[in-house]
Image (tube, rainbow, N blue to C red):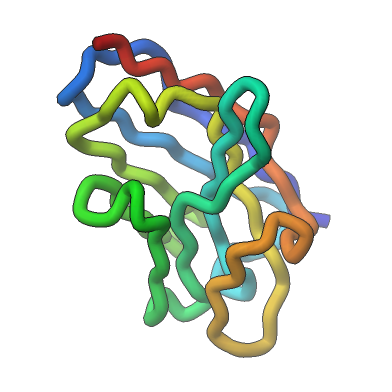
Length: 126
């Protein structure tokens, strides 16, 4: 059983940067598709970024392209979300997630993912 325990997040001014970390235990992340989602108050959980098990495929929501970067460090069994040029509309609770796949894939539906982090608040002030 894989366990994801997120770290990072917090309060930052618009234009600033944050890095979210998602260290995994119990299983190796290299066998999983990994993603970040976010959920703002009153809104549905939305896909932010995903990376395939090999790291060869990455996908981003249009709203974060060019500003956010997802990466994975198999040696540390951890994946990350680097967020630059943050905007107030990026304010949300961010969740990391993982799904076991036997091939490279970057699914965007939250129902595909079976393992979730606990969530961390990111607040961007204007």
